[in-house]
Amino acid sequence: MLSMKFIRENPQIIKKDLKKRGDKEKLKWVDDILSEDEEYRKLLQKAQDLRHKRNSIAQEINLLKKEGKDIKKKLEEAKKSPAEIKKIEDKIDKLTISIKEKQMRIPNILHDSVPVGDSEEDNKVLREHGKLPKFDFELKNHGEWLEDKQQADFKRAVKISGAGFFFLKDKIALLDFALQKFAMDRLFKKGYTLVQPPLMIRKKPYEGVTDLADFENVMYKIDDEDLYLIATSEHAIGAMYMDETFDDLPIKLAGISPCFRKEIGSHGLDTKGLFRVHQFNKIEQFIFCRPEESEKFHEELLKNAEELFQELKLPYRIVNICTGDIGIVAAKKYDLEVWMPREKKYREVVSCSNCTAYQATRLNVKFRKGNEKDFVHTLNSTAIATSRAIRAIIENYQQKDGSVEIPKVLHPYMNGIKKI
Image (cartoon, rainbow, N blue to C red):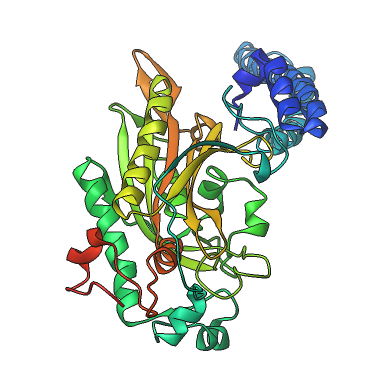
């Protein structure tokens, strides 16, 4: 979220950004926060003055007692203080809640390079890489191919878990692990520390890393527990240093985890297969850094992801996400979209975000800056989400005889298997 210091000092910047996003309904929130904050600070001072007065009266009573004088009037005066202070504290608590609710929902300030647009159709293509494959035969749907080759079972997964789940089997299950190990090895060699996070986290830390609307739309809640299944390792890793202060930066991490999401694709190609599902495995990149370095590291994260897909020899493009598609947490976001030849379109497989100080402010994660402290910047990016990468491999590497070749870079991880 935006700090109160930033909101107090830059209301016009926030309003300009909200207009850029087309989020005009929140313009009034900025004025409301400032008005409530002014009242909040006045009440804080008033409560402090009353406490000081209460302490002074207590001292006067003690002095009168020592002098053997009448303390009745002072006792009556002292009795009023707790009720007056409690009344003010109740008002302070209500204002605190009201300010925080709006503050948590005002989006991050966008980078100047974020294109203006209403939806994903307005995202700006920055570059394309790789040659699009051509086929002289009809490609088989990846879900059907997986079932025909007995490499996945969707029907039995639906039977026991519902739509959006799957069993991976045999060589494709091995391919899933091969993709994870491939990404882990590359990031490890680049100096990223591997992290296996908890798969469930409490609501307070979760509120620090995501849009509050995700609690209803994305995350799975554990009944009767203050726990949510993680939608991505980014969330657990981002919250790992909550209420802590760094001495040395940057911190570069690579998260390894399954991910759980309530959201699922629309009817059509997404409904049977691996592209948009409730559970999948992902290797994630995450960086904590100083504010002046976050743009540089944003490009580094994207470069890391591009190199992985270049090694896999999957054609892709990079898009700069527009104002209507970026969400409230990121200041700037790139997507890497891989070519899906059956649909004849690019589909998102990597999301790469610079969240600046937005998450760190919520989580109170800082770094030492001389004798002072400041909020760190946080960045995250997919390295490989295996289910989407598997679909891309099945479609781009499919052969006329119905087989699928394994990308050469994965051969060392596949126990000698080069084709399925």
